[in-house]
Image (tube, rainbow, N blue to C red; front, side):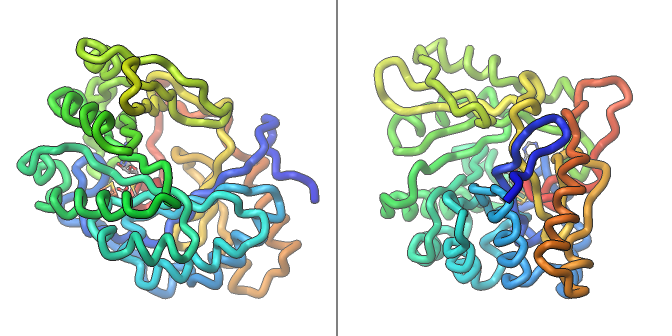
Length: 329
Ligand code: SAM
Ligand code: SF4
């Protein structure tokens, strides 16, 4: 089978699947306090529909599938979808990004179903500030979810993702760095991107990876580790050997030239970039009875139009057509 390659020569090997646009948090950098208008149920792909599209994409070279949302763990029976996707030939890596609030109950069933890796979002280790940011008083529950994940050695690495906001995250950095040192978690700081539904993003609210690294190195020197070419993160270990830290710097150090990723929204739209203004409908053809070959043609056509790069820092930047939780971050 001809590999899935875009017009700039990038092979597509990684897929993010949003399983729901709903969420039980309201993170200020993502969703409005009152939530968003949720997709009607009939618009959301069934597990069978997701599996069919993943099967077609895996035949075309997609090796890595990450489930996300909204909050993926609010989708009922998610372990069943994991079981279905783990059995798709060609899918070598199956992972999940979650806010962790339901993880203490679901880590076991997810691992049993074939989940390989997990990313848990955690922006603060202070109860008050966690609640301020997520608009939910759920820090202890998330920490319980992380501890539960630790019980399953199959589920490694456990990554903890923190969205770095200027004027907020500086204060969190020492505690999060300590967490990376004392727990088997790779803590990663992600630069704030203009994907928040409230549109409060401004470039001067981005706390860059370099700024955080400098804060950490005031106390603990870091040593850079090699990273895979398609990796979005720069990886560092603490020089004294205790733990690992990562920086995902899409704003200050864009990694678009190595991007191997596409996204499927909960309502079956293919997106070739987080910042796409355009989506490619796969649900329509799928529900109209398209053959695998027809679906493949739709996918190849979309991928040929994959954007060269995002233009966050360009004058006249235009925001994406949907916000982060609706796309599937
Ligand atoms: N609800 C799950 C969670 O929070 O992990 C999965 C979906 S969430 C949209 C996926 C990731 O996107 C999370 O790590 C979240 O912190 C990140 N995110 C959300 N809004 C963002 C923004 N405006 N800029 C950068 N990252 C963002
Ligand atoms: Fe929900 Fe994740 Fe968005 Fe927070 S970042 S509101 S947990 S989707």
